[in-house]
Image (tube, rainbow, N blue to C red; front, side):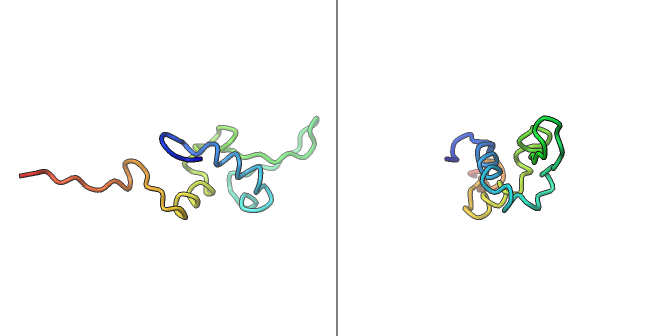
Length: 82
């Protein structure tokens, strides 16, 4: 599912759909509002594009749990040869 140049957007979307009342329940990016046509609506600011995917707590937890190395963050230091 994640690999290569994935930005985590699919993981965030799937997590929100499945965990709307679980893991995402207390998230600060979750917004509850009333809509005239749709009634009571629960939205995610990350999915709506109002914030960046990398700030999503569900994605950060997934990366930490699976120990996924991030390009530029977990790369080993390169030593110059003498």
